[in-house]
Length: 170
Image 1 (cartoon, rainbow, N blue to C red):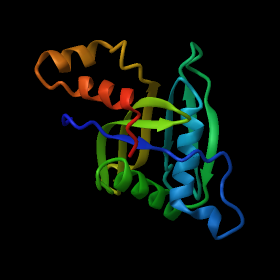
Image 2 (image 1 turned 120 degrees about the vertical axis):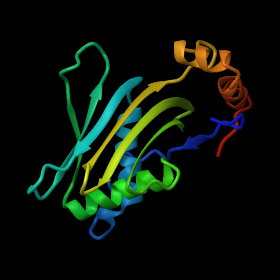
Image 3 (image 1 turned 30 degrees about the horizontal axis):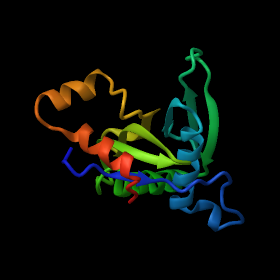
Image 4 (image 1 turned 30 degrees about the vertical axis):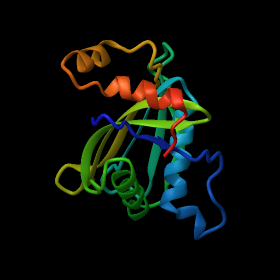
C-alpha cells in the first residue's frame, strides 16, 4: 500500500433499482450488496455460482458471536448478471482485475471507514465467486497486522490515520 492511502466512497443503496432493465444494473447491485454488508460493524459477504443453477444468492454473515447466521442479501437472476457484478467489483474495487484477484481496501459509507479484504474469481477455471470480509477500522487502535506493517517501514497506516483525520474523500 502506498503512502497515499485511498478510501473509496460507497454510495448507500438500500433498495435495488426497479423496474427492469434497471434491476440488473451491476453498479447499483454492487452498491446494494455492499450496503447490506456495511450495515454491520464486522461481517462477511459471499456469493458463489452453483454450477447448473440459474440464479446466485448473495449472503451476509455478521460476525457477532453467532457464526452460523447467514442473511440472504440479494439474488443475481442469471450467471450473466452475476458475472457482470463480479466484473464491477473487479474493475472498481480490485484495480481492474475483472477476472480474479485480491485486495485489501478501505471503504467509507455513512461516515464509517471499513477495512475490507476482497477475494474474487470470475473465470471458468477457478469458478465464479466472491468473498468480502469487512470490519469498522479504527485508525487510532490498529490491530497487530497494522503495527507490523508500520514497523517494517511501510507507514501506510500512519497515512491512513492522517487521511481519515483530514476527512479526505475520493
